[in-house]
Image (cartoon, rainbow, N blue to C red):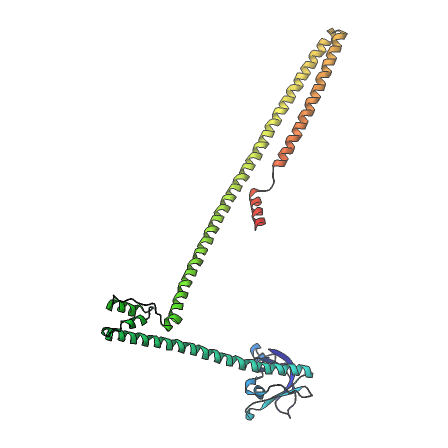
Length: 344
C-alpha cells in the first residue's frame, strides 16, 4: 500500500490535473483533491478513477521505465480501453510509486498461483484417500470371496491377509473358521488414515479430560483460598472487636483507678492534717530532746516518701511505654490486605 500526490491525464493531448493516487495490491485508486462541500461524505471519499493493474501492460513488465520528466504511462492490454499517465514532483517519488505498483501486481499474481497450488494439493490428497479407500474395499471383497468360495481347496492361509482393523470381516472370519488363527495384517488405508484418526481422537479425549481435571482442581483451590480469606477476615474482625473492648476496659479501669487515687489522696491529706494538728497539740509539752527525735523521724519519713514517689513514677513510665509498644492503630483487616498485596 502506498500513496502520493500526482498529476494525472488520460491522453497526451489532455492537460494535467492534480490528484491523489493510492495503490492497494493491484488496484490503483485516483481521488480528487477538492470536491463540492455540499456532497455527502461518502461521495466525497469515492475515487474518481479505479484502475486494475493486472489488466494493464504493467502485468507483463519485468522492470519499470520512468521518463525524465518523472512521468509514467499505464496502458490497458486491450487498446480500446485507453490508458493513464502519472507524473510526480520528482523522479525518485515516481520511481518508488511505479515499483510499488509492479510489486503489487507480482504479489497478487503469486498469491493466486499459491492458492491454485494449494487447492490442487488438497484435491490430490482427497483423491489419494478416495483411491486408498476404494483399494481397501476391493481387497476386502477379494479376500472374502477367497474365504467363502475357496475354503475347501486348502486356501485357509489366505485368511491371514484379511485386514485386522476391519471388525466385520474379522468377525465373519472367526465365525466361519473359528479354529484358524488370525494374523495382525492391517491394510494401507487403515494404517494411513483410520488408525491415526482414532489415535488422534483418543489423545484428544485424554487431553480434554486432563484439561477438565486441571480446571476443576484450579476452581477447588480458588474456593479453598476464598474460604481461608473469609476465615482470616472474620478473625481480623474478631481481633478488632476485642481490641476495641480492651481499649474500652482500659479506659474504664483508668477512670476507676483515677477515682481511687483521688480518694486515697484526699484521705491521706485529711490524715496528714489530723496528724499535724495532734503534733501541734503535743509540741508545747515536749522537751528539746524529744523535739530533736521527732524532727529526725519526720525527716526520715519524708525521705522514704520521696523514694517511694520516685519508684512509683518510674514504674508508671515503664508501664506506659509497654502499653504504647503493644497497641497498634492499624486495623487487622488492613494488615491482612497489605500482607496479601505484598505476597502477590
